Structures are given as C-alpha cells and as structure tokens.
Image (cartoon, rainbow, N blue to C red; front, side, top):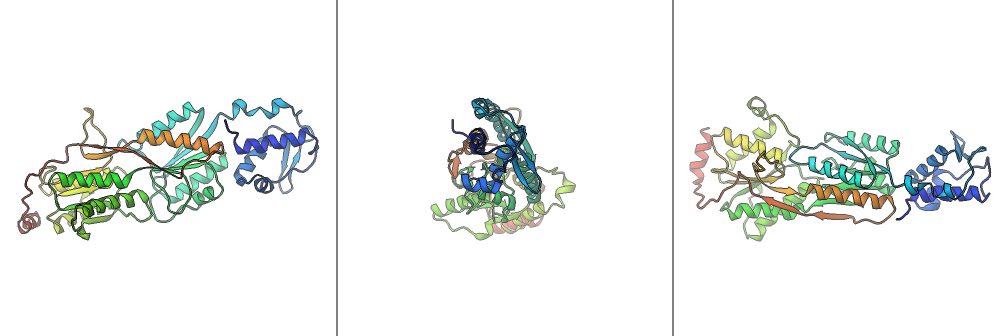
Length: 392
C-alpha cells in the first residue's frame, strides 16, 4: 500500500531527529519549505507538522516557527511505523447541494457504505445550491483536517475560488455529477450526452415529431450542457431541423417544492412553462433535465385540462419509484451507487498519492414509466390546438 504524502514527511522528520541531524531546540523546516522540498501542497506539509506537534516531537511557536521539543519522546522504529494501523483510518467529507429520493439518497448511502469498508469516517455538509456555502464548507473542513473531499459542485458559470485552490494545491479531491472545464480535477459523472440523446430518441420512436427540452441555464454546468447536446444530437442524426424555440432553458427549480395550486400559480417556472405550451402548440413531447421540473410541467398540463401521456409525453432524468417499484415518469436512472463507490475508491487512491483518472463516465438505465405512450398518429392541427389552448 502506498504511503500517504504527509506520512512520508512525518517519517522523514523523525529520521532527522533520530539521526541527530535535528537536535533538541533546533528549528525545523517550515510548511512552505517542506512543501517545496517534497513537491506537495502546504496543506500536506502542515498536516505532517501538526502530527509531529501532537506527538510532542516538535513545538510550534506563533510568529517564530517550529522547533524540536526539548523533552520529545525517544524516536525508534516503532515511532516510524506508528501509522501502520492509524493511517488506515481517514476522515473525508462529502459536500453536496442536497439530496432526495429522486437523486442523491442512494449516492450518499453508497458513499457512507464505501467509507465504512475503507475504515473512513464521513462528514456530510449541504450547501443548498449556494456557492458561498460551498466555499465556507471547503474552508472549514480543510481547516478541521479532513484527509480528502468529495464535492458535488453548485450549478453556475462562476467557479468556487476555494475549490480552485484545492485543485492547484493537489489536495485529495473528487468531483461527482459534473466536471469543471479547464480544471484538472478528477470527476465522476453519468454519460449525460448519450443519456439525453437516448431519451429524445425514445420520444421520436413513440411517434413524436416536435419535442422540447426544458432545463435551468446550462451555462457553467457540464451536466446540463451535455444533456442539451444529447437532445440536439438526436434531432441532427434524424435529419430534422430543430426549432430553437424548443429550448426552454432559463428555468430555476432544482429542489423539491410543494406544488399546491396557490404556490404554482405564482411560480416563475410554472408561468414560463405555461406560456411555452401556449406559444408552441405542436410540441407533444418533452425531454426534461430534472425531475422537479417534470413535476411542474405535469402540473401545468393538468391545469390546462390536458393529460399525460394521452396528450403529452414527458421523459426526464431521475424519478423516484412508488411503493410498488413503479416509476411515475419515463426517465434515465443514474447509477448512483456505482458513482458513490467509485468516488470513495478514487479519493482513497488520491490520498495515498496515486494517480486517478481525470474523467470517468458512469453508465445509466432507461426506465419506462407512466408518462409516455405510443402516438400512432399525432393528429395535431396547429390552428385548432392553438385555439383550444387559448380558450383555457
């Protein structure tokens, strides 16, 4: 098993003391000096010095530096191998916007189970989709002394500064669900482009010809960008011209909400989707980027006096099953448990100083639900449909 980098520094310093190269009262190299000597981050060198201080081999004096303790324990082989058992136990943290039965719960469970198997302790911090909360979580957890981080990044075009610092310092880190363009951090994601293309192909196979794509803004969020690419690619491969108006990608909903009528009537996404259906009466199929948006779409359709799947078919990503293991929506089921397991195993390798892949695509499954049906003949009279909707 490869020795973690901070342990190598720790053992090196003990050897220096044992051989008399560093005597009682001598100043020891600083975090910066050790980081440069061993080509590691200052976070790693700091951890080694912190452990030396905890075990009374050195004492750290604010403003002056670190010095070999005058009453330090005897250094022997047992001291050098003290990590043989202790180093197997790691403290890692998961930073995630939130989780639900639709997506996230199985991911968290898999990470927790894999941590137990790897003798790791797990801390979970939720950011609620706020980049400031993500920054605060990273800073506090690193300062607390976690050995590594698994991060489900917040949506958006602006990268978290604290996250960039971790990557630049080679801090043990794995991203899940998405990757950051131009940032050399290891990421584990569903093959979103292929999955979205498959969903759109499925709607075409049912007889739909005008299909729309609903999502929040794709800018800066690789998951949504890839799903949009897959949707466009499905149209392109069939030689069909995609009406750019069939992209409704400025929606907001990401977390579960209470979709009671009083709330949805004033919901921006609800109103935007309702307006979209009025303005695009030929659209009969929807590829929806997230489960919660699919719920809003279904509510709009119902309030318009229409039915799913008789009048409209809906496919989406992620959909919880009911007590009979039946899915409400036809959807892409992401392999959350595999994603979580791979994330922990990669993080453990990173902690040990091993190289890990920069991008790993996880498989998925297409699950048929109750939101789609074969359209043997989509008899959509554009003017008649538009008149009917305007009468609502």
